[in-house]
Image (spheres, rainbow, N blue to C red):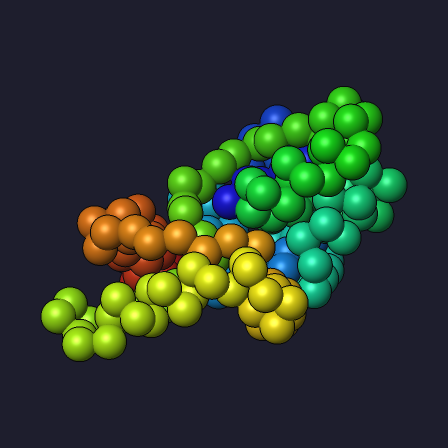
Length: 173
């Protein structure tokens, strides 16, 4: 997850985001929690009451373009979206810079109980999604550019963010 800003802006830290226009993916709870945590750390307040506007976008590439064309001051996107947009338009790397990052493998997770009898079959079906037009449609509907398997401990960074966010929220009251 990348917090990106316009290179030519005066935004050098989270403190500089007060009163700015923020673009985020619609319905992305992880991005919301991350942005809220950044503001709670800095201001002891959530971001929603501290920014000029919050623009909800359905696609991450729109967020990158909004920054590029100065329609937003900061945005949260996933690494793969930023990379694709930068490859399509190399000038994006000149006009948009990364202010902060949160290491996360994906924004979408599915869980299969350890020892579940159909676990291997489910993995094989999931991995075959890339091979068929219908599978690609399903991935597109869920805005999932890739499927990968990870270990439970790889979710630790998300758990740590969740605990920190809860602690900061409790401390703000």
